[in-house]
Length: 284
Image (spheres, rainbow, N blue to C red):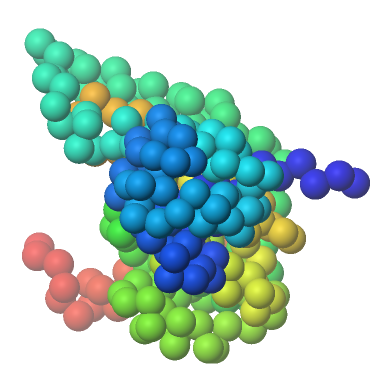
């Protein structure tokens, strides 16, 4: 069967590349000012990076592009993504009725997220999460840590083994030393993958973890072999990406797990409720 996965994004290629100092100078220009490459020539990019034209072409080849034209096209895609970032959206005034605009936007996020799901893919994700003995390693981007923490809490409450991978890259990689083949790595992020998340997720899959990728579009940079991708919508009327679609998606997964083990989950929740109320944790 042919591999129909989209090619890795420019950011993902940069994150995984081992480059010489000369190539790194051009790569840093890509990260800081993709416009210089998106609208440049080999000569202009070499001048901006303080290097030679052959070095620019060598970077394109090192990143897996057939030539400078492929690198320039990738830089244009990267630039297009950055034009919709928080910093750009913050300059756009809110609508006259921000409350209604927010209501409409978040309703649309929910509809587009749920309408865009592939039921067999959701079923595959639930099956991966429901396997006895398998641990779920939840790997969020910086923006999605709050949703990840809630998911780990809920998975733990219903009796699944879940670990939140948060903190420095060194801390996360050290924690992952306990990862076993057949475990699940559930990553969640919005557009523009963080380089550390790409590296950590790749390392987990290389260790034998099965990936569940929850991602806002385009989501091209993460490993998917043996696993599944579930997209969610991040459209917003303000500066920051909406996480409502991601929250709905994680809730959908938890609900499906509960349905599979309803009697056991009900018993666990009843026991926890007795513990919470018996210890006087709630006000009367």
